[in-house]
Image (cartoon, rainbow, N blue to C red):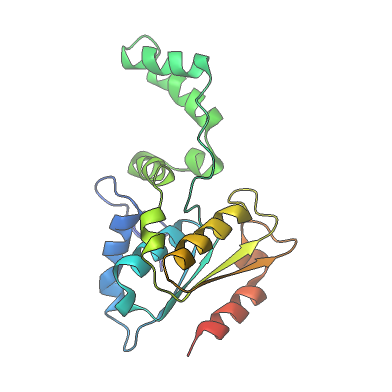
Length: 200
């Protein structure tokens, strides 16, 4: 299934975050005769957690891989030269083309690939955090993570599990050695096994 702005689905008309994406998916859940198991990777994991927190009666459980749900360390301020260029761009001194080139050089691969409203959505979602949602998830929710994930380290999943369980929920974690961020592609067998275990 392509979320709005991904694959063949047109982007949203305005900037939205993961919580809005979750609301957009509710009509899809209505199509199932029985509540489904929700599986989300990375961006999709953010959306899955929002659905699990707000609509637990619509699903039988959640399986999340490689989702940047929490910020573990304060973000670093951009270098002074970048901050100055941003300020001067606002006043028209630094042209948009020059500042855009600076942003592309600093941004992630996802940021560089995104354009228009999808870039603004990416920036919005990157700055979201889901502590509140995690503390409201009853579960079951399983976090399947690559030990070598450098984009979203295992510590994120470990803290997410603690937040769910400390609030009385049912969260588990499984870490797969020698697998990175793209776990569904790098180790589909582990994902398939985890899904099968969670199905009734």
